Length: 92
Image (cartoon, rainbow, N blue to C red):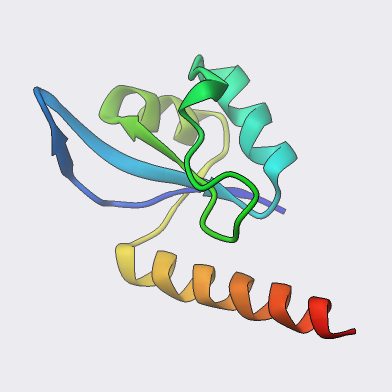
């Protein structure tokens, strides 16, 4: 189980944001607590695309706390696998 940050560089005003996501909601929220991100910024809650948009400084903090760096391509693959796994579990 892990937390991940991608290499996206989306502009939001003066900020440059990337995505932080995890294998589980619990891991994601634990990381936000460690790096000081408010949980109210959670996006796509309770879906396979659940994530936070975080700035470069928070990204660096997340990495220092063990987050794994991934590319946008790796992110897309991981989210697709997570969605497929979720769908397969629903069919059981």
